[in-house]
Length: 167
Image (cartoon, rainbow, N blue to C red; front, side):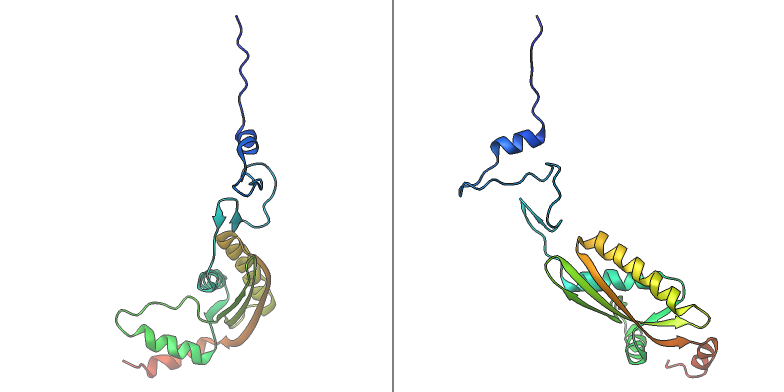
């Protein structure tokens, strides 16, 4: 004798049992419909702080060939001094400024490029990598990435630093 069994899918179970004390239906996370934001679900809200976006953007920018450093000259000087202090941490968010909303973010970067690098190409590669990294890492939509090229690092700049060591 054949039994007629019905297997309920997770979506069907969620739809039949969804509800709250207010009588509103709760959308099941796996019902196939896109969510308004990956940060807001039926089960709660995820908040991403600006420092997270800054660090992800800074790391993503530094990964691009042609980027010598982040920040302007004053920022680089401060970072160079602070790196000599025992126990200090490397600043990955230097040269990065962020404006963040609930679902979107905008990133401003200040970079120094290597001499000989195509500035426009480096900037486009930075922009692409920052968008990919921040959107993947946080779920926030990146609406713009503004890049300021503050300086070009010349090879002879390294030679001058050897004579004026701070140690």
